[in-house]
Length: 236
Ligand code: SAH
Ligand code: DHB
Ligand code: MG
Image (cartoon, rainbow, N blue to C red; front, side, top):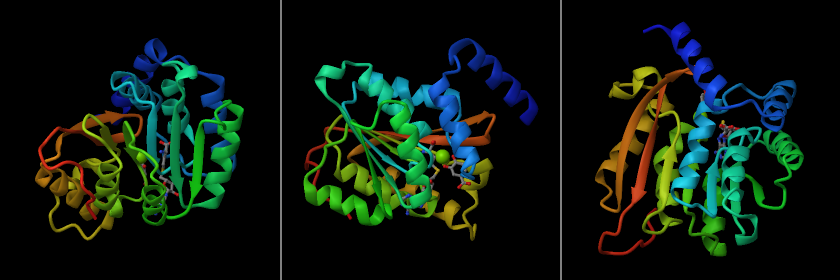
C-alpha cells in the first residue's frame, strides 16, 4: 500500500490521457473557493464516466449527488458528444442549496444549462417526483450522494431504467471497510446493504471494482439491467 505511488501513477495517466480542461479546472477551483468538500470524482474517474456514457450511447442520464457539478460536466459532455441534434437530458439531484448553486454556475459556464436539470431536494423526495412525472427511463445512472441510502437509490435507479441501462455507484469500497459486517458507520452499512441488494436482484448483472489513486483506496459498483422475465416493475 503506497498512496504516494497511487497519486504519481494517477498524475502520469492523466498527463497522457486526460488533458486538463479550463471548464473542468474552473469548476473544481470555484467549488473549492465556495468551500465545497474536495470529494468530486478524479479526472481519470470522470473520463471513465464519459467512456461509459459513450459505451452505452446514453442519451438520458440520472445523477444522484451533484456537489459542484464536476462529474455532471463529464457525463453531460459525453452525452452531447454523441450528437447535439439527437437531444439528451441529464437530471442531477442535490440536497444542499449551496452545492446546487455552485453547480448551476459551473454548468452555465460549461454551456450545459439547457441540457442539465439540477433538482434541489433530498433524493429520496425528488426520485419519487421523477417517477411520478414519468421522467426516464435513464440509459445511465450515477449514484454518488449520501452512502447510507445507497440501496434505496439503487432501487430507484432500477425503477427508472430499462433493459440495457447501466447503473454506477461510487465509493463502495471505502478503504476496505466494506467487509466490516459489524461497522457502525451508516455509510459502510448502507454500502453493504447496496451490494446485498445488487446480489439478490435478478434484474441486474453487477460487479465491484476496487480502485486506488489520488482519492486513496476505494471502488465503484457497475450494474447492467438485464432482460430477465418479469419486466421492470416498481421496487421500493
Ligand atoms: N458527484 C459529485 C460528487 C458528489 S459528493 C462529483 O463527483 O463531482 C455527494 C453530494 O451528495 C454532496 O453534494 C451532498 O450534498 C449530496 N447529498 C448528500 N445527501 C444527499 C441527499 N439525501 N440527496 C441528494 N443529495 C445529497
Ligand atoms: C465522500 C463522498 C464521495 O462521493 C466521495 O467520492 C468521497 C468521499 C465523503 O462523503 O466523504
Ligand atoms: Mg463519490
